[in-house]
Amino acid sequence: MRRIAGLDLTVAPEVLSSTAEQEELGGIYLIVGVGDMVIGIRTHDVVEVLPDENVVRLPNSKPDLAGLFPLRGNCHAILDVRVRLGLDQTKKERGQPALVLVRDGSTTSGLRAGHIVGRFVVDGSAIDLHDSTIPIHRELYSGVFELDGQKVPLMNLEVLLQDDTPSLLENYRKLREEERIPPRNEPERSSSHDNRVLQPIRKDR
Image (cartoon, rainbow, N blue to C red; front, side, top):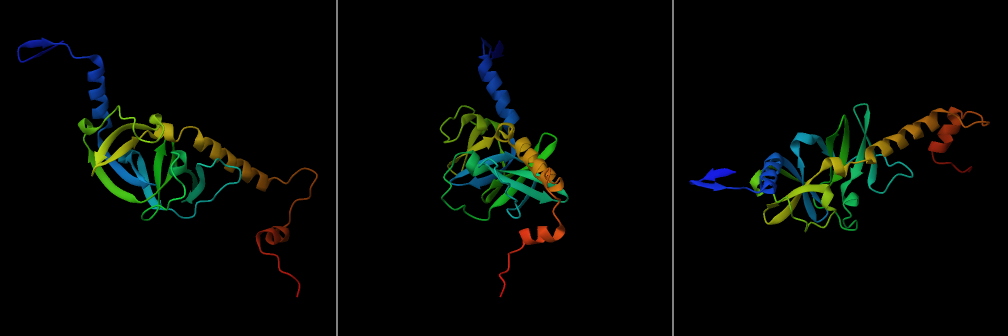
């Protein structure tokens, strides 16, 4: 019960919770292009933005897992955001593609995105918590705001990255183990054999 202008008014609990959630979602966001869309990523979760280069694709990995990105002695799993969101893969990205490294719990993962639009302060009161018109799964974004007339979904990174990073890193560990441990009943590969595998085979003249 609240008293406003001398009147006792009852405010619906869902209205109060929505307002609190809007305030919590407000803040500074990195806006990036993904296909024909733009999405928002909270800068608090962003570690670094780098050119989309040197991503190593792993065999038999999921389509939305772009690969591994080696950086300063570590390998970070890279999620292809456009594939994960189910967007058109045939159109070229506008601008220079980028990798956005984000905090994923105790680890750092990467998002393969399109061009970087910039950083913007988003007022919580301008966030629509109930907009379901964005053509991606509703659970992937927490709310929507408008930027220059275009709707921008604010991504829920916990859901976006859910379960994908561990599986990709596990594939990487298994691959490294297979490289280190020779198969049973087979001789260990010599360095010269490895060179012949890695280098083009020359035909005898």
